[in-house]
Length: 87
Image 1: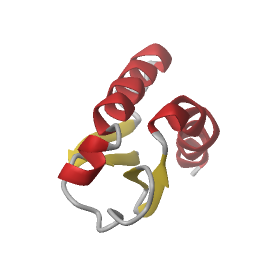
Image 2: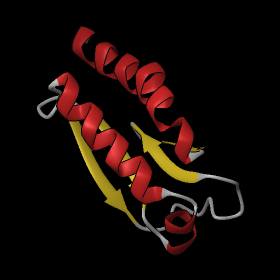
Image 3: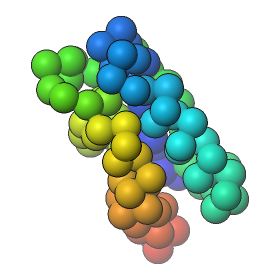
Image 4: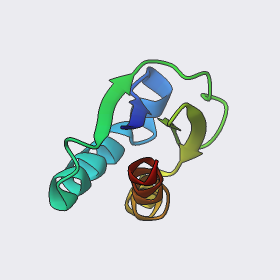
């Protein structure tokens, strides 16, 4: 199971967390990945000083701009799902 979290703390909320969550939810649905991705919102990831929204993919913290959510999902999340399936 691939673990994907998006920070919804105050700073990330202001930087577009809602848009990232919406994009990820849409893409999970589009790709039929509900059984393969544990997707959740979380509070502060202590990345507030960085530009963008804090996310965690399988425990690895990253920061992405809201407008990059689709590309991140396609390049990183789908790759992580494929790696988990190969195990």
